[in-house]
Length: 356
Image (cartoon, rainbow, N blue to C red; front, side, top):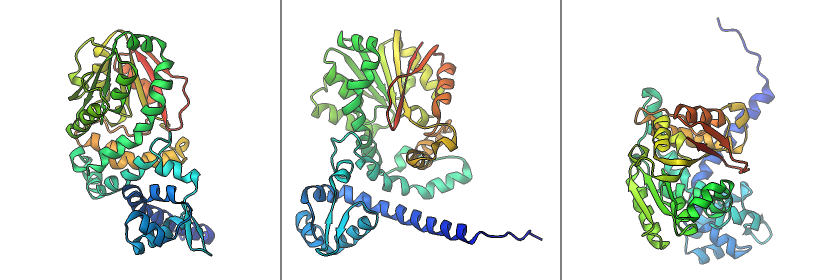
């Protein structure tokens, strides 16, 4: 017979309330996605206090839907509601991360990521039984645009202003016409940024996702560096030997099928005294140290994307919260002899400099 458990009624009720809160937050994610995709946040940022009817006039959207959407965002305290005038206001402190794509901590990419990750939950549930995973081609195209928008502020505000200057020898080589390669380049924002900052440099980008390379080529053309940047569908195993002064991976290794194999190929593609710049998420391998908003986000996106896309190909499935010790372990297993964390403090990212 099971032992009778003495319940803490207050704890029980608090936990049920937490479940209701979390489910409401999860469902609100769909409305946040809509607000980003339809430009409602941007319209609110420009409008000042508005009624639902006035917002409908500004956006051309249905007033009834907007009124319900505004109610959700008001209860979440994303927007402020004035009961007397029945107006809604997006304060500037909220407008910057929600509506300004030039803001260093713009979150539109996160909002856009909600739907493509959640829609694969049934396939991921099946993977819980089989140990397999979800391949990249099973995600909505929104997924890859969201990654581009999520990471774009990194390159715009930090790559050539802070990260490369933290490695003076790398900057000197690129200024003198050296070669750089970004592996897992996605839509090409990192190689494009490097090319624009170092016009004498030879710049390459590789990614296994053909759709991302197609976007990267279009972006390079738009930015006027298509002649300087070579973009290739492929992975690290296809890198030419001893060709690059700088190779970078930005938020890539923990997703990869064969992390040690990838990093070994990168080591082999570096010129003598070349540098590998490895960016990973600013998280620990210890769950207890990840009890924070970033940890909550990373475990979710890791399960629904990072880990499962690796396991789909029989990969390592490391996941986003691998931490510095795992990064060091992979570096030495791949044959690197020098590994250091760059003295750069970022809220979301950590950067490592590796040399053969």
